[in-house]
Length: 380
Image 1 (tube, one colour):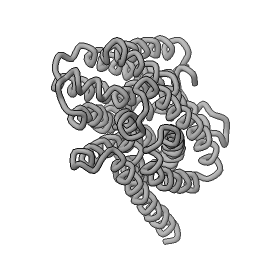
Image 2 (tube, rainbow, N blue to C red):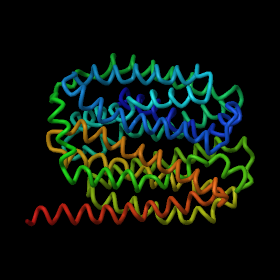
Image 3 (tube, one colour):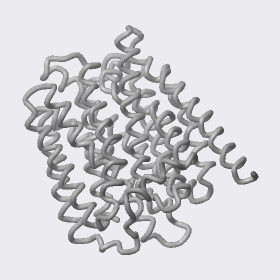
Image 4 (cartoon, rainbow, N blue to C red):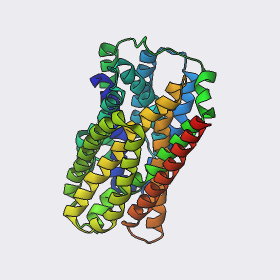
């Protein structure tokens, strides 16, 4: 579990540190901050493209071997980020780095669920996701601090090193995972014909966007709106990560008791917290508390969505589990884009929180439709 989670730690660090260093990247590359946000969107797009392609095309590859290959590709993508000479090549490098993301989490989540005791699948999935959350406590603040003081490229040197360490850990500690049977591309693609899979993915793609709309521009929000010293930003990023750890644990426990309830509870919490952040962002203390709560509510949603997708995907679980991260990164790309739009329109750095609250409300509506459709199908 620790070896699997280490990969999540590396992925979480590379995904979120870009947001913490966005002003530095924008300054170094000579672009505006909303334009620099395209690097965030490019990574997310890589996840969206890579998750279904890799999960389907590599359906016959033994699961442990696939995990190792994915982490090698992840390491290469981050090394290219370090070496990118222009903003255009940086965007391409971030896209490449994102390609293995969804497939890695999909296979790792299935591995954890397969190895878990009966009745503790969601907790096992949450354990893998804990690496992603822990990245926001240790990896992202540390890499952000390093990037601010030595240059943003050094942050991605650290990420590449984590990737190499994960490859070694997977080879040494993860069993052959013979309990997960390989399938074939057509079986995996069958997940896309299941309405409940598609609807659940849509809930994640929309509902999760609110967190990213705020977090993508959190550095400037804290310094310009909350009037916080730039040196304190990594501490708030750490608080956000602690919130993710807490939310991840609570979300796993709630999902083992009732997946649908856990999803509604997490989305409802996101609505309230994001709406409240519009006011909370004007004070450094309440902004810090708001960052913790945003991280907690977002992370609480992920284990429940992952578990629900595995439940409704039948024999196409690898693709469905991978697509969850594609959906969450559609949310990442859309949230960053929508947040950038309202900022560029002159509405200020609190406007993304308003957009985020609206996305979370839409997520609640979509999940209500999803559950209603499911029950109607069962009764018919």
